[in-house]
Each structure stands twice: as structure tokens, then as C-alpha cells.
Amino acid sequence: MKNAKELLKEKLTAENYNRLIALANPKMHEFVADAIELTQPESVFVCTDSEKDRAYIRELAVKNGEEISLDTPGHTCHFDGYHDQARDKAQTKYLLLPGSDLGASLNSIEKKTGVEEVRSFLKDSMLGREMLVCFFCLGPLDSDFSIPCIQITDSPYVAHSETILYRPGYSQFKKIGSSGNFFRFIHSEGELEIEDSQGNAVSKNIGKRRVYIDLEENLVYSVNTQYGGNTIGLKKLALRLAINKASEEGWLAEHMFVLGAHGPDDRVTYFAGAFPSACGKTSTSMLPGQTIIGDDIAYFRRKNSQIRSVNVEKGIFGIIRDVNPKDDPIIYKALTNPCEVIFSNVLIDNAKKTYWLGMGAELPTEGINHSGKWHKGKIDADGNEITPSHKNARYCLNIPDLSNRDPLIDDPNGVPVGGLIYGGRDSDTWVPVEQAFNWNEGIIIKGASLESETTSATLGKEGVRTFNLMSNLDFLSIPLGRYIRNNLDFAEGIEKQPLIFSVNYFLKGKDGKYLNGMADKLVWILWAELRVNGDVDGIETPTGLIPKYEDLAKLFKEHLDTEYPLGDYIQQFTVRIPENLAKLDRVEKIYKEKVPDTPQILYDTFAEVRGRLKKAQDKHGDYISPLDLMAR
Ligand code: SPV
Ligand code: MN
Image (tube, rainbow, N blue to C red; front, side, top):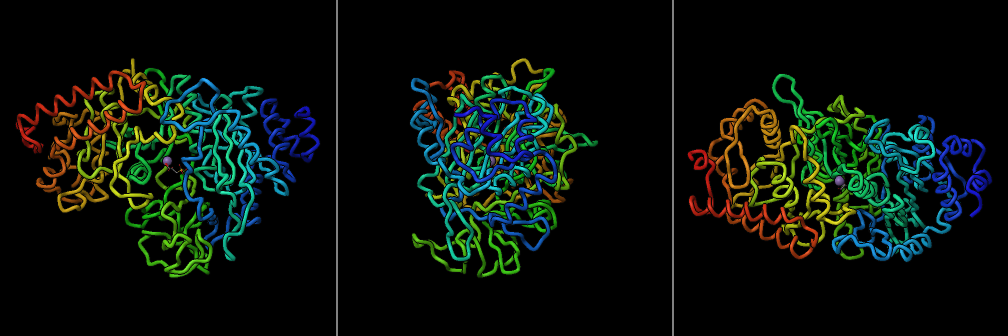
């Protein structure tokens, strides 16, 4: 390749060239020059942090048809291809040098072969298009947490989404000078086609969709796809890079929300929580009366003998299904009032209004959706009825536009973590809330044992339990055992270790009906807040500490203005011994068979908890009322 600067000078306008050169970073210059040579764009736009540049990207997305302006000011809608509606797990792979190994659970490809393949798909992919070169920062600016990033893309929708989701990073790049310590992402939609006479242009060669990750180079390639989870480099692709970096540097990158829970006397206690997709993670981070730091990805560092956390992002790319004025009033308000929102894969009508499944209103019988022109009863090529909006349809908005943002959202020191919360979709095993006895048991029995039952929103059978440790399995870039070890070690020497809780919003009775209402989760979180501050006692079970009835009854009355019948408490908090034992067996089998580097302490802890469960079973039987335990 020619000297990078010479090539940039030749291909860029003076203004864009000067913007790049003002950042004295040879590695970044080489990355951009190589991308230009590879993809051959017609022009290159270098985006700084100015409002004018961000407006240019927003307008470009509408001008070239990737987004449609809607009736409400600031709102736009984007459609991904019919077969490009979710993360492509099969074609997302780590590029590995011969001899390196991430374990059988992680998808990988030999580096040379993978790089050749993905570069061949990227070759000339931007002919006739404008390349966008954007700079962002993961985490707050000017902080130990900050990771500068460069995103190259030919999709103004991707760039626009990132201006909402991430803090601007051009000025951050100025500060790092010639340092090579940043993440790089290159994305092209590849060849486009009009899917339907009414539809917009979508990636055509889905069979050649690839997301390849180079951990050594902190570089990700993404091609022939538009869906955000595959293309928005800073989201789950950066999480993979960050997990590897964190493991090398001794911090943690987690698939977690961060929430400020408000206790008595204006006390705020911060919680971070991990839930697999579609299990109530965003709605927990948006609990009424509480304040949000972030809803999806958090970094954790040890500072002054404390564990502190930041939101890596500054926006939300949330599932829109079931967002309705009753259950999600704050999000619903943002989605129905003027402010910057990108809807994706929802239904729009002739008046450019948006509709989605579960919005609490009647949906029109025709409009435009991810299949192009849609009418009720429309069938796809496989004979399946097309839903009005896709089940994974999303909204993308700025957290600062929400009324419940936490004031410490951009604090460069992060917020102190009082507790961690792990939850999944579990119809019959875990109680609604339980505190682990200590950090190690929390990490092992709660986080590393997390499972979730499949729903109708994913392909395949419903109700199948899928193992998903820390809800981070999809994004791990290091062997599972090492990841667990990192979590265990992280709290060592911390003065006040965060308490670890499990929650379960999905417990069902014998009749198959949920035992709890949607709103009840507020009470579980506020109970955890009281525990962290030592305000209430717990009742010992074989697996941890559960609430006393009177403490919950008080919280239900104060915060939800409802009575909490004792019978409900007994049913919900009955310790289910056979189900808990079966869960231990199921999860242990996975570690034994699939995770060769599982730390011994995991097996020891499983054995200890199994022993406690059996002892309790001998004494009380299979199903133990919390009142019997209290009586002890
Ligand atoms: C998730 O699925 O966990 C998401 C959306 O947050 S995605 O960007 O697709 O990962
Ligand atoms: Mn997520």
C-alpha cells in the first residue's frame, strides 16, 4: 500500500483530510487508508463531534432512503431485510492464529482464511457510495473507563444509530495522540436490492453475511448485513473486544444494566443486572421512581477499594414489542413525542405513524413493514404469516431524553455498585428474589448458573431452558472458565463487596399462570436495596437469603399501593428442592462436558449447595414453606 497519508490526501477533500490529519494517529490513518483501498468509496466523510456533522449523517440517512421521516419531529424508521432481523450467531466468528484456542463453546475461524474471505466480500463494496468515518468513545469521556473507537461504514443508518447510542469520540482521539489503544470497526452493507416495490434497499447477499472479530488487533469486520446487532460495531462487537481486553487488564465488561435504586431518605444504591434478551432487562433499568444509568452494557473497575461501574453507552437500542403506556410509561412517552428516535422493523401506515406488537392499541391491517408492503394475513416464502411488526423490532433513543436519567450518568468515576442481579425466564425453580450468601456463591450459583427458557419470540420449541452464564455467553471472547475466574477474583480485597441477588419474574403456578404481576419487580429490587444497606434481615434457605413477609408487605403497600396476601408470599417463596437439585445437575453437566477450564471452586460450591438442599429435603420435604424456615 502507498503511504497512508498520501493516499488519504489523494482521495479525500481538503476539509476531510485536514480533519483526519488533525488527529496525529498513524495507526488510525493506516486503517482508514486501507479501508479506502479495499472498498473503493466514491467519497469519504470524516465526522467530528460537531452538531453540524451529526446532522449531516442524520440527513444523509433520510436522503438516501435508509430511514424514512415519520409524522413526529425527530422520528425516523429503518427497515432491515426480511432475513436480516437478528444477530447472526453462526457467522460471527473469532479470527484465530494457528495454535490458539478459545474452547469449543466459542465460534472461530483460522485467521488467514477468515481475513481473506471477509476482505473479498468487502472488496469494492463501497463503489459509488460515501464512506463515513466516525469517532466515538465507549464509557464516559476522560475517564479510566474510556475506550476510543473508530467506525467506518457505508450505512448512514449505522452511523446515525451510533451518534445516539455512544458518546462522541473525535476529541477523545485528539487526546490519545499516537496511541494504538483503540477499537476499530469496518462495516459495509454490501450489494443492495429493493426487497419489495414499496420497500427500501436491503443487503442482498445474506448468504455472505459475515462478522469476523480479530481480538489481537481489536478490529471487527462486518459485511452484507444491516441489522444493528451485526453492524453497530460499538454494541455487541465492541463488548466482545472489551471482554478480552478486560481479562488482560483486570476489569470486567458485562451485559448488564445499571440502575439507581432509591431507598429511604433519598438514599441511592446502584445495582447492575444481567438478564438474557427479552427477560425484562430494559424494563428493570426503567423501574418507576428509580433512575437509569444504562440498560445493556456496563464496565466495572476497582477504585479505592470499591467496585465502580459505568454505562458504556448513552442510548438505548431496545426491543419495542410490548412497550405500552401502562408497563413502560417513560419509554412510551419518548416514543410518542418529538425527540430523536430511530424505529426499526415496526409497522408504519400512510400517515407515517408507527405501530408495534403489544403497544396497547389496535394495529392497522395494512402498511409498510420489514417485508415491504404489508397487509394482514400476508404470507412469507416459507408459508408463515408475517407479523405486523417484527418480534425483534427496536427503537433507538438517547437516555438524556428520558425523564428518569440518573444525574451521575456521565461521571468519569462511574457509580459505586451496591449489588449485582441475575435473572432469567424460569417457570418453576428460583424464588422471585434471593440474596446469595457471599460473592463467590453469587457468581457461581446465581451468575454462572443462569438459564432462560425460550419464548415464542425465538425460533424453535418454547420453554426449553438455555444455559447463558451472566447472560454474556453470546459475547464471550475468552474461555468460559477464565471468565468465571475473573468474576470470582474481581471482588477480592474489596472492603464492602456488592451483594449478589437472583430474581425471577416468570415463576408459574400449577395452572400455568404467572405467580407475579409485572409491577412486582420494583418490590424485589427495593428489598435488595434495603439488604445492601443492612435495613432488613433475611430468612436462610439452602441457596441464600429470602425476604421476610412483613418487609415485602410493607414495600407492596408503600410503592405499589397493594396488599400482599400471605398466601401469595408462601406460594412464591416456597423453596422448590427437586427443581433446584435438577438445575444444579443440568448446569454442572454443561460445565463437565463443555468447559474444560471450569474452576474447581465451581464444582465444590455446587456440591456444598447440593448438600444443603438435601439436608433441608430430609428435614422438611420437597417443598418448603418460607414460614417453616422462619420457625427454625
Ligand atoms: C440483545 O439482544 O441483547 C441486544 C440487542 O441488546 S443486540 O444489539 O442485537 O445485541
Ligand atoms: Mn443486550
